[in-house]
Figure 1 (cartoon, helix red, strand yellow):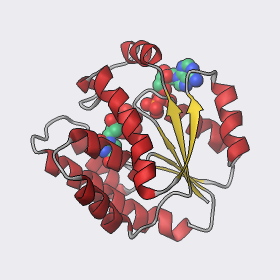
Figure 2 (cartoon, rainbow, N blue to C red):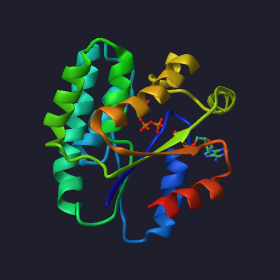
Figure 3 (tube, rainbow, N blue to C red):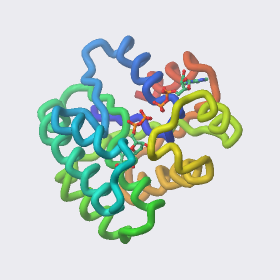
Figure 4 (tube, rainbow, N blue to C red):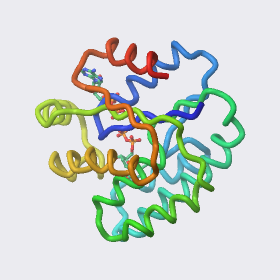
Length: 189
Ligand SMILES: Nc1ncnc2c1ncn2[C@@H]1O[C@H](COP(=O)(O)OP(=O)(O)O)[C@@H](O)[C@H]1O
Ligand SMILES: Cc1cn([C@H]2C[C@H](O)[C@@H](COP(=O)(O)OP(=O)(O)O)O2)c(=O)[nH]c1=O
């Protein structure tokens, strides 16, 4: 089963992926952007904050996604795959960005993935207060520098993205302690 862990920056995705890896020893653990050789190069470019064109940024994420689906997801689709982000983030960030129409965003993402979507989406949901606290604790990258309100609107857009793709969504309270969250996810998988 292909599942994805979604959430805004600092929601605890990497932390949970690490815990899930300890539990599901045979699972394929992967991520977007950066789950392939090409993807790690694209990741450096998109997070480097030197892109001016929003369309260029969107297309780079799509290129990362197409390579990831072909090289990692499709060959392992019968196994347990746990991904840190997916098409769901791709659609959510692009919806909030607002320069590309909803129809084009969904259509181009379907093109990039050949319609290979996660079976289950876990959203690690943060409150504004906890997001502010966690951001204050880390060095921010280009996307995170866009601010708290921006990230909270992404969180809502993640829910919208799962509706547009008709995916099963499990909302998890990301302010709970790490072990409780891991248990909730494992129970639901
Ligand atoms: N459930 C939690 N409660 C408190 N702090 C957490 C929790 N999960 C993660 N963190 C902390 O929040 C920060 C961001 O976590 P991380 O897993 O890197 O998030 P993401 O991968 O979503 O950006 C880290 O400092 C991490 O230790
Ligand atoms: C997958 C994807 C991520 N993003 C953004 C979300 C994140 O801010 C950034 C990289 O994601 P991520 O690797 O989760 O960053 P971090 O480890 O700092 O949490 O790219 C998009 O804008 N579009 C996309 O399609």
